[in-house]
Image (tube, rainbow, N blue to C red):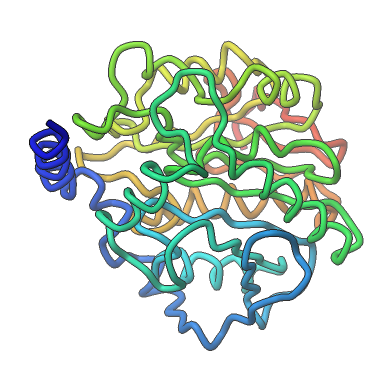
Length: 306
């Protein structure tokens, strides 16, 4: 009885490759920052997951969580782009192998295994506990606050990691939860953040401002989910919604958008103490208005033109 169901699931996944292609195709980020695995070093004693660091990076620590295909060339390129902006970039390997860029393998290694909860409305992925320990050790090594960037499959994870030294959270096209057969959020999945109540409460108790981004027509990260973010975190979350045609998904990696990347870097530098002046956002808005992140760590609406 299981074989037809499994065959149907594989067929559904096959039809979804084009939808998830934003996570997999080579990108502008690779053209800007072509990266090779030998530019990364496997760090020791950073917790229960293998953690790679971009060798040439320096500055405050940023933990970059990779996407569904794996720690893909696009994600390595993004790490290099970030490292060239004055932050130290750490990449935990969540599943698969470094350089992996395979939708099928990534899905079965993550959503079909015990460490990821990809469909439930209010249940956190168990791998978050491992990431919490990684972030704690990275922060101890860096000797300062840490930022976390989540993307696609890991898009809401930074919310659950706030506190204990994590003082910046960038949410890129959060995709969980989604339906495995349709390979997109459906029904009530479209309106939730895919975190257990205790992890969501952890984020609510934090005062850390949040930056979230998506492509406006991205069916994997629906508008209802961004509305839920606004309703939950109110003036703590600034949001980027990039105009695009259907098919674009990965805001900072495969479908790299330079202005969104610039906003993320500005936000991270202020939050992590590498910039001491207000930074005006290029795309991000706070409750529909242009905004800036101030050295006091808060978002502010900008009422007058530049």
